[in-house]
Image 1 (cartoon, rainbow, N blue to C red):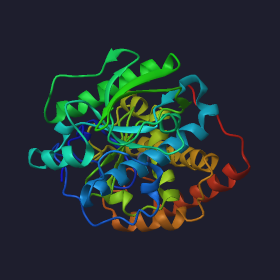
Image 2 (cartoon, rainbow, N blue to C red):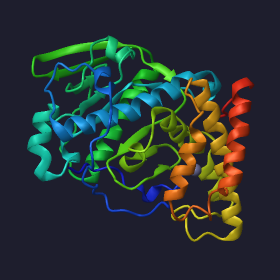
Image 3 (cartoon, rainbow, N blue to C red):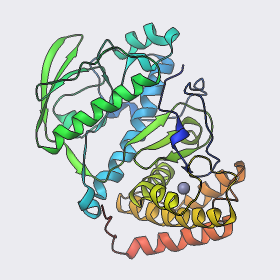
Image 4 (tube, rainbow, N blue to C red):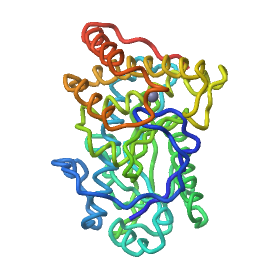
Length: 341
Ligand SMILES: [Zn+2]
């Protein structure tokens, strides 16, 4: 099953592999993940998806839940850039490959509106009764219906709805008008605020993660190799690139933005410096959010051993692990820094 996403040609920073230009279409989902209790975090009264659809929902939810926890726990240090955190994942029928749409519609309750893929348990939206399978009709009276669009444009349409939601959430309480198989209803809540995260799961078997300045993308291949603690480090690393404006900085210093390789020696050195900064902030973000980084060295060692194209843009492994150890020790006793806007 494929799902369209905004292709990562905009992305230039990655954690462990070489970023490449890809087609917009996604890889077929691979082996089942051992998700454990994740599914219980979102109690849906809508359609109960089967097999691959349930797996995709669980993956989306897992990534969103870790990102949410990182964003909220670190909110105090992101005061200048605090952003409402909706606490749910959106999608749209036209993001799915044409052949998959009838099944996607049936499994996810999708129709002509942007739908709720997953809701993170314990969030204000979940407590107010929003559930996976709801479709969003309006927010505070603003219509969220959009002309039906296909392919990559459908992904952009989901992002537009997200932007409208966040803009309304900045003003305070929101009332969502939603529809489901049991009819229409209103959901009213005040979103929590946290660090900008905007993390997206990409159904792609390649082991990678990217940041493009505002968004973070985590691939299926990488998620499959992560515990939640590892995932917090990965998402934290990519969030750090965005929070520290590395894209802008590297652009200003002339490093390549669209491809990671080949880079000039100067560009490589600058890239390595931003990688070290991102690792350090990631450790701090994950520690603040109470993730256990005692397995971080093993995780990074395992990924680097499997990756190619790492040497030019990332610190060598010995240096990286030694900096990681120091950062973990510091984070356990240190004061969190403030992220500037
Ligand atoms: Zn990186």
